Image 1: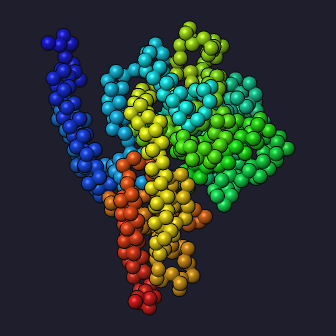
Image 2 (image 1 turned 180 degrees about the vertical axis):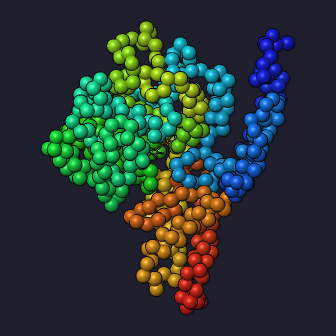
Length: 505
Ligand SMILES: *Cc1c(COP(=O)(O)O)cnc(C)c1O
């Protein structure tokens, strides 16, 4: 018999088991049948709202089991299932089942991983997880860091550390005005986080130097150096270069080694945005592509992307963890990293958050379940499937394969008939492919997103999905062509019926 007092949110052990076993049974069923379900709901927001009902906040409570049952029904039937093998949209991975169990466990223990005293073992697990992430991608043992909510936060955390390290010491008391204008360098393909960072941290978008890419979608090193020297001549304070590994649109990896060399020459902070691509650095066959990664002052890597962690999980790795303390600790006078026995590791001193959840557990668990070998196998398989998608598009007469880097392929549908007589061919193809993407996304059969590559509106498949198979890729190509044909016919009928008649065979 439990001696605990009964409150409106209490559950007896029996109640917890009933609701919990029920929940686990249902989740197991969802995961077991995920490939037979639609990728996403076909219902509109209005319809979903009507399922949910418009009841006001309930005055009195109901049983936990009933709530769990209702929640699973609502979510299983009306969600976008990014765990579906044909979900290749944006950069959102299917989530490890062990991650779901770990989140449940983490929430049950509920450590506050902001302070060591509030999370003794969880703090150790987070440190071990971060060490393993560094080992996995092949950076040196000096690297440490912090888990954050995702790529944006991981990049912000590094950005402010870079600014603090490269600005006059007075910046912490006098603010940004105590520095000459600070400038940051990145390719035009850099993710939108950089603009937000420029708003937050006083640089302004005027302080961002967007550098052109070469024909392989990598930052132009010659233009990068020119921009730095020009800014130095003009009295600016260049402080940071961002290398993408790989970039969010096409997956291209910048020439990290050359960026690193420039950063040494000009005493700049070298940051790598590897939110998506950094885990691929673990593959022996990609060592050359990622050469220079171990020189970075900071690296953003998202376990919730290519390590298949459930949302949310990002990580900032820094070569020298003192740089985070100098940026974020309000008591930097007493830091002493060599004496870990007497100096507790308090994560609130390493980043933006004070109270922090236990993000590490789901990553830590999956890293052990798969091991280094298991992860390399899954990442390699994703890359091979992406290459297959490119190859199938390339040899199909109605598809144009556009780019392929890491596990991202871009392609577009190009109909065989009706294009010759158009003087706005490219505009039409952009309209057609944009409409095609919308049709595909709503179909529930496959989920792709888009990229604009050299002015072309492309369908974009990013495979960070351990459930996707060769069969799925073959079927996805068939679906794209099938829907593309239908849509082209419809658009031609709609806009130029006479012209279409002339071309009908
Ligand atoms: C996804 C991504 C981000 C943003 O990460 P979130 O987890 O969505 O905040 C930043 N940079 C790159 C290269 C990314 O792929």
